[in-house]
Image (cartoon, rainbow, N blue to C red; front, side, top):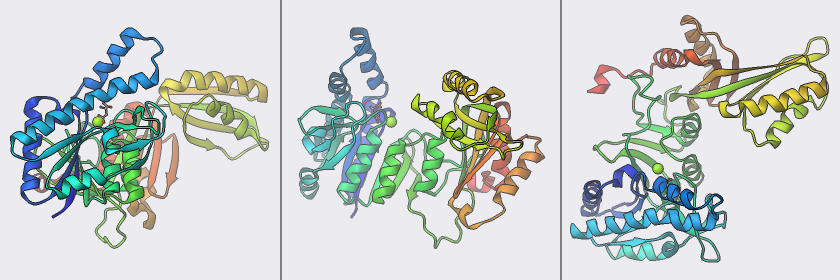
Length: 411
Ligand code: ASP
Ligand code: MG
């Protein structure tokens, strides 16, 4: 017998038929003797629909009222799923965040969970009931409804799993797991049996958006084993868990992440004196522009170049700010490029293996791709290249590091 938290996203509960399929799956776990807590999102499209309604009535909506509004989406699905379970003779009971209760801070629209009272749910489980909990919502100390930010039901599920010491937190979605890279770019991308929290964070933040990043961080911190699986077909999915050093078979490279929408700003000929990097990048971060890669060249003749990348949407603002600074500093010029991308190899196995970087550079050279910038961390090597070569780069690396799905694995 295991205690399992299952989370179903919007598409998995998007129609009455799908809710029925979800209820049938839950019943199979219950019949096996497992204790099940279910967290659901709103029906697909519902949260956006509610937001649009609010926009028709208010240009500067009160965040408190937006949370009251958006939290209704999940109130619908918990009730419908509880009804569907009861129809299958599975004893079930629904809970709003405030009924559990999931206590958060008062930051409407991006509230953080402070504490979860698991008592009511545990007594349900011990009485043979399934608890169906509304994702994405909580309540602050004053009793106001709060929401956790878009995609927040993942975080609800992980936080509940941590609070209840669940054996596993299963996230059911419309893909059957985490892949070595985006299957839309590489058609022989392979589903990973397992991946570590650290790797998943790198993959997720670089665009392989299967799970809310906050949920993965939370799961890593509380060491809740997380499994991503499909709600449409049976299969083992991908297990996200802690780094297991004893696993000799662990691959060097878990996957390849990429980020299309990057842009680069170079400021040339800035004086090589203390405080220059701060003078250039301080105003950029003060303007709330997130900087990704930063590279400063070795100085020659008392001056140097500084390069940084930002999201493409922020390029114009970053350029403006940097041109202003360039004048103040007497820099030679500011040059920008709005058509670059970043491709990264991710894998905890890289920590203990040298030579991966050069293998990566060779693979790119073999297909004639020029590398613009390189950055590395313990478990990641990233290159910035021209955007038009992104798919070629991802495919070349996928093959070079043995990630391609073979026919044997496919069957
Ligand atoms: N319904 C919310 C959203 O669409 C929360 C979630 O689905 O996780 O963002
Ligand atoms: Mg979601």
